[in-house]
Image (cartoon, rainbow, N blue to C red; front, side, top):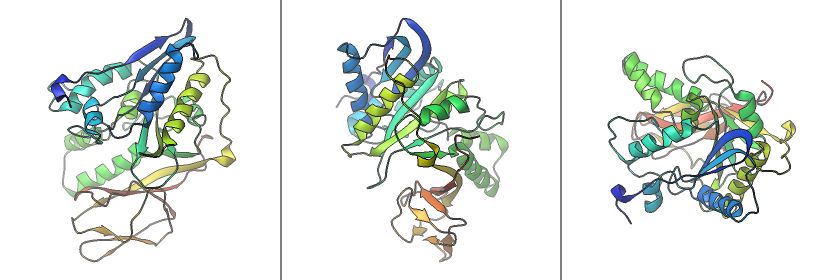
Length: 327
């Protein structure tokens, strides 16, 4: 394996002769999530072979966003690239150097599709979608209709919204409990910014597609279908427009609240997986002092982390979002 100083960054852009959006499609933001890399390489081979001409706008492919993590076959190189994703004047680690290359690249595009996979032993693909249009301080946004129209054409039925609002609420609660300042609050909120949040901050729109379990042989096919549907829907290639998933077939979930692990002795009462259903009052865990942790409403658990450190996210709770796509 090459040392980090010998690694390079690679993007490939295809530009059509007609007018259209500038799309960027990425894989291996986390190095052990390779389904997007495989799907991107498949699509690029079809373009290069003449089977899939790019006719409008442009599409940039980044098969491997984080080459150090990819070479190690681990989620991160030095740290999680999908947090605190901003250009750094004094880069401290490999992911800072990725960000200094990647952020200007993202800012030069209109639409991002970031392809991921997950560690859980089971579960179906899902797409993480941004906020409703708003002028607020946390995540101002004006492209809800375009973003959600694309999300409904990726080929999955499960949609999750509310990441920054739920994450930000946890940060604010954590900061208040420790007596932190407004400046400290802003610094920690920035930690929640990953590829899609950064893309939205530059005026574009973006989706994270979780294509399935890391080693699921179907995950690269999910990623490939999403790429092809994106290119067709945005008219980058000359192909039939994919139809939106009907509302009645969708499962839309809103991330509502995050609960932190407060002590190393906090533990779950069972091995939870993302999207496991929970009922109001159901016991989820036990605090180190023996007090029960109960679900405050019925919904689904998301991103449970039994190995979380104290004062970090332990799990999120979601509830159905019947308004998704109709706001």
